[in-house]
Length: 128
Image 1 (cartoon, rainbow, N blue to C red):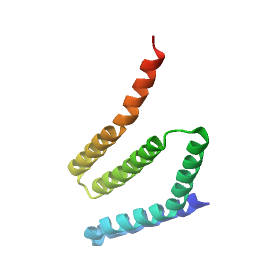
Image 2 (image 1 turned 180 degrees about the vertical axis):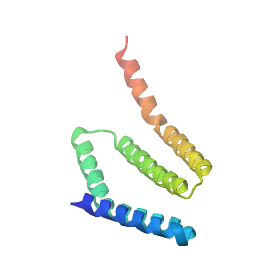
Image 3 (image 1 turned 30 degrees about the horizontal axis):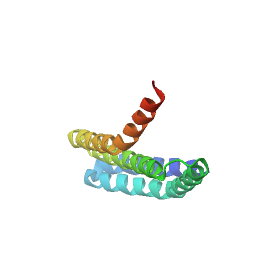
Image 4 (image 1 turned 60 degrees about the horizontal axis):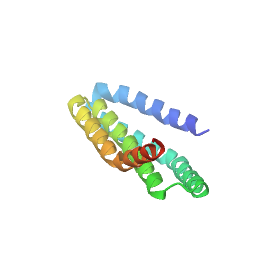
């Protein structure tokens, strides 16, 4: 029951943050970072299992390994971007959060161009 641990960490961090905001608001960001790192550590095992399963599946289906690698990197960038955006929003820096979000989206689009071009080439081969 990993979700119980994750929810527990989140709720405990929330309680600590609520208490700290009254007395030492400058420490709130540290509690948020620690809680996020703990949750990320808990899900790393699941993420590595998913990557292994996708690799095995792509070997069976003979999908281009470069595409799978790109998809995994894109997913990692999306997770890290969302984590950074959440941290920025928690600390009240919504302007920086929106810039980080935009940067993540641009990087994801630029990385997905080979997949999009390959898909378009396949569609053009099918069309008369």
